[in-house]
Length: 154
Image (cartoon, rainbow, N blue to C red):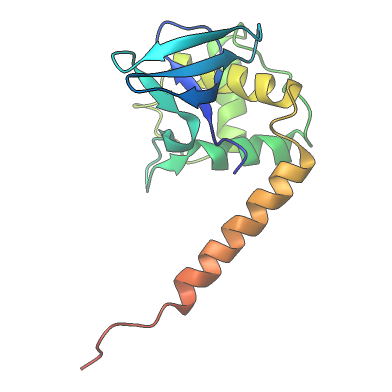
């Protein structure tokens, strides 16, 4: 999975990559500076794989949002940045995730998603190969879900 081991830690700029685990901490490496540092269990650590975005139907995993952005911009860095105007940011986000919940998703959330996406593309973590592998993985998971036998029809 292309987001495996990519973390966001409250109070730390940008994204971090998990390097190793210790008893009460993890060693992470900044994707921006390349510096390694410990992150302790008291830190608010979020893995990008676990983050979802509020929509009106179901929450959408961040990896699906990144895939939508990748497809919309054909793998390039977005023209929208974290410093863009609020209406420009929401217009961009509506293109890539039309049913996002406009009351629960704040401009700061969208800015963070945009900056994360641009950083991940810049570092080659989101790439054509990663997106193909993710699409195959998603298709296989959907196929497995459809072929699961129904339990005890009586």
